Length: 454
Image (cartoon, rainbow, N blue to C red):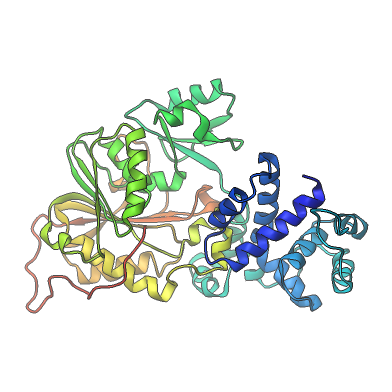
């Protein structure tokens, strides 16, 4: 493709993302699937351009509003080109109206480009939340949580996420994985915090490698690996991953157990569980079972009260910790909003807690950085469930897995401090002798809520 054709493809894809109520990565996959004539290098170039616009969405919108120009896909791309340092003459040569390229610039677009030619993307008058690309609904809670680190942490979200792999100890060691990557010409290094992690220095299609096909490594962010580690699951235990989703943490936990014991992956979306089964087979893990649930209050939960040594609740959340991977998620609410998620999270945690046996662990986790979804949920749960207590992170950390990261009594990971996605996890322990319920205490707690997704 010519540079002009790539530019038009980027405009088309951006317009399709805006018009389609699906995640940007899903829209992009369908877009390229329907245009197989676009080669691999061109697909990469087009996608990178579109994702660059998504990562600069608030600042580009601020400039368009400042100069009085309507926001649309063409305007966003023009503004992005000019604010990145392109000259007007260089831009005009791309918008020639030729075959496969963008139509010629309109008078209004000429004015827009001329106005922005002498400016840069950041401007002193931009509010912190605009400069840090934070939507209004999340700005207040994140400012309260991060204080004077708000801009630092949020600016760390503006780049691309690293490519992390988790070594499957059932198949081999980290040293074996690193050696295989070197042999394949892939530059990689051990992760800083996870004892099972490998970080690929330069992105590579890992799924093409034998060590991936054979199950020695899985793609998993280092932060997510740490969430699995704090379960401290041991061989022979009974474990339930209550919101298993695609099975990433399920895989990590089952491998920690060395294929001994039982891991039950549950979710309300059975299709995701079925797709995860291929990952389980590739990893050589046969101690995993799957179970679809009708809701977080499926009757199955009541029938299995107190049966599990470890209960993991990776709750559905706003995903604020994953904005490096999903920049469009800042601006497009494609599922429940924060006000709907908070009661759902509380209901899921309340229901799943019933599965925890006396002396067992209940792990509550999110990929959010909002206290309302994290610490506040844990505090509210502990206030109404006296049979549980918070276990300090250092005490929860597996004794054979090095030193726990310094994040306080709970696991709190952020991109700027830890170079991981934003993750939260709290480990709670059920008392060996649970106190008798007070008179009138309901068995199931809160009423039934909407289905949740990991």
